Amino acid sequence: MQTSREQASIPVFEPLLDLEQAAKLLKLHPDTLKKKAQRREIPGMKIGRRWRFRASRLDAWVRMKLISGPAQVTPR
Image (cartoon, rainbow, N blue to C red; front, side, top):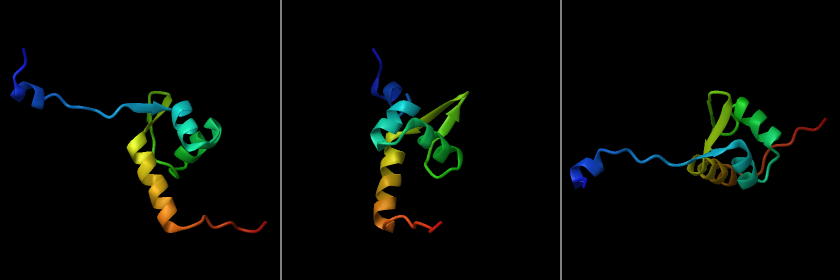
């Protein structure tokens, strides 16, 4: 049995979302999310060849976007 001291030393990681899970959460196409992550417009990280996302970071990003107001659209 582990003591509370031993349990305290075990790091607890937030589960990571894969590209499809994060895209579904944000209601974006996976290709769009991947491009935005590559351009660092959306917080994500590449582990090996795969993109991973933390739900808490995505939530913070969405909240920041809501506070900053609507996106600027440039005329073509």
